[in-house]
Image (cartoon, rainbow, N blue to C red):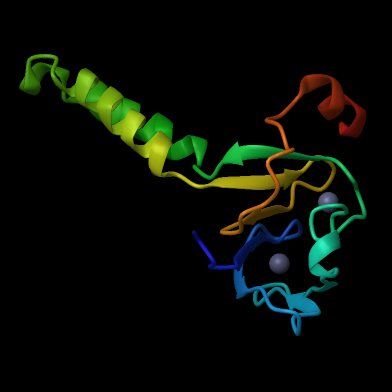
Length: 137
Ligand SMILES: [Zn+2]
Ligand SMILES: [Zn+2]
């Protein structure tokens, strides 16, 4: 069992990652870069509403930056001549491995604030287009 309740917030304003250990005493979180402060709800309401924008819809996403994936693919393609094409299946294996290792994060549909490092309820689903469209500005 993973009892670690560390929370990883991505500041919706400046996209800075803020890491805190969740406890009952934690009532606010402040971003060290833009100094914005948010109220953190009680644990049972933690994933009901986004503390940043009050939105109630979230989706699950792998916590990996798309740029890292594209970077890895470019490196693999560049290495094709010197590895006799082996770099591509290796990248695929790394990708497979990473996919199992990478923790999932919960993202708010509206402000794209994200939570990680916490075992959130299984009821959340990956991004769904019809919900996403509602929040598109
Ligand atoms: Zn910030
Ligand atoms: Zn939000």
